[in-house]
Length: 91
Image (cartoon, rainbow, N blue to C red; front, side, top):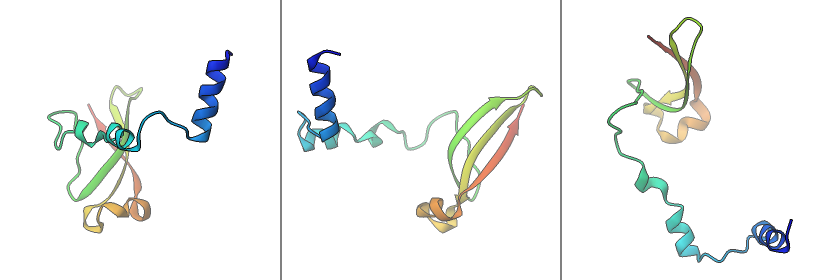
């Protein structure tokens, strides 16, 4: 490992940055990249917020989607108190 890599690693560990806080905040704003409503590849459940899904193709030839959900009536912050793991199956 050369000296530049060591110094760079040290600076990262110490939180030293050559990017200003305004630039950093702007560069970390990913909300502009997320469409309000994607046109396809959307899984929704009436009455629930759906998050963190992962699909696998099972030995049965069907697609199994595992995801977390919580009631919309509880608000977005209820993800930490009312989330549950759910499962959906599709051909």
